[in-house]
Amino acid sequence: MVTPEDLKILPDKPGVYLMKDANGKIIYVGKAISLKNRVRSYFQASRNLSPRIQSMVNLVDRVEYITTNSELEALVLECNFIKEEHPKYNIRMRDDKQYPWVKITFQETFPQVYITRKMKKDGSKYYGPYTNVSSLRETFRLIRRIFPLRNCKHDLDREQVERPCLNYHIKRCLAPCAGEVTKEAYHEMIHQVCLFLEGRQVELLEKLRREMSEAAGKREYEKAGRYRDQANDIGKVLEKQKVVSDTEDDSDIFGIAQDRLGSVVQVFQVRQGKLLGREYFLLSEGEETPREEVLESFLPQYYDGAGFIPREVLLPVQPEGLQLITEMLRSQRGSGVRVRIPQKGEKFQLVEMAMENANVLLEQERTQEMAKENRIQEILGELQKELLLDRLPLRVEGFDISNTQGQEAVASMVVFENGVPKGSEYRRFKIKTIEGPNDFAMLQEAVRRRFTKGLAERENEEAEAGKFSKFPDLLLIDGGKGQLSGVREVLEELGLESIPTIGLAKQEEEIFLPEQEEPLRLSRRSSALMLLQRVRDEAHRFAITYHKSLRDKKTVKSNLDQVTGIGPKRKQLLLKTFGSVRRIQNASLEDLMKVPGINAKMAESIKAQLETL
Image (cartoon, rainbow, N blue to C red; front, side):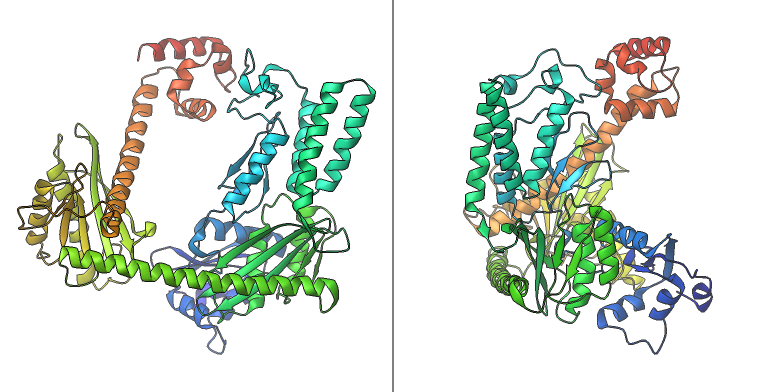
């Protein structure tokens, strides 16, 4: 519980504060120019807080903070915490989706270009995020066709390749691996890719035409032909782009629409007066939160780490922290950025168009959600009817076992609510009491541990906060009659025989029910069966993933720990450098000696010992 003494010791400095609940989980992250004043304001009786923030304050058990040198640093740090921790009460992209980005690995001598959903502070440049994945993949295929980028996974700063692959011979790669292109020439092509991704196709087209003329003048006709083909492809892209502005400005135009369930932010990306792309994002907060506050939280998250910042940003309303957001964009761009709220003229009309599109998208989203919800209710109703359940199976839990001849045995528990996976409530169990391959007994142990903990949480009145206090409307076991009987014994032992339980066997997709000799067979086209299969397959996937991670850790530990003459730090360096024991085994003595602290004698010893394992 936050006490007056806790509030007194807060520093009067800029920084980030982390609100945590009784379980130590971060539920809200905020920034402040004065941590002392900002945090204290949440706990003043006279403070008029929104329902969302008041609900958050009621759950706060303690407050932690990190001081920074400026409010701008605090804003960047706040963005990082929100993306990493997904606090419940922060305004964030709904479902915490990991939107894809185009990544260019500038930290490498010969950069790679690929699509990723994880952004890291590793020196790479990122373009995005993109919400239309199919459109992104089409763009990426076009980039691959226009620019002969390397597509291999070789670490060219460490590895040497004797000869180029097929992509070089079919003119899909310049073969930097084999020294067929200079670093300068390859970087020039990467610069062209950046221009393309930034929407500067007109500038790129002019550049290619100049290079084509220069190459033709030097009678380098093959090179000139390559430039001509690239220019033609980019010209076709330009033909499809819609002109929306008389000026050739680069700008991002935002619109926002809200209802009680959430918000939609529409972004128009205008480059050199042409509409390059449009993205939209679903946010968790609805109309009870002012649009100004939603945009104030959204804009730093959207632009954090972006590879390109336009010269102008147009908004429908003025966020409270407009000056700080402008400062962040200028710092990231390295030059001036105008953030404006136009009131008339062409730019006002563009913002109005973004607002209209946001409203259309919000209406479409709600229509799709309603149709999906109705369909889910139909499927759950079908499931209730086929399994003779007393109520709709709104919460389904699935269990599975994974082991190798009884070794590294694990169990998984997955949760589906309203037909949708709820990953935050997945649980996994390392089997502790069973030796040897005995799936029946392992399932019993996992189910017993799950419901024993659930009953204890309910008795201690921790039902709301506990991990296991919610009980399923349907329990699904991956297996047949034997597995089902074993689990039913545990439920009866715990007094929970009223929980409906079924087994789903893989081979014939037969459903086994307690006290029924013959299995239930549903049509392979049955939506109810497909839902059960999804739960079963997800439990299987989750169990195998955990089992594999334990098995791999054991393999790495046993092999490397048998190598004498190197300590824990050098073992860690070896793994970090090569990625796996197999790669260490296959590495040359020269490569091993590149690892700090590994000399020639030690490298020979490592190679010799690993060959015997």
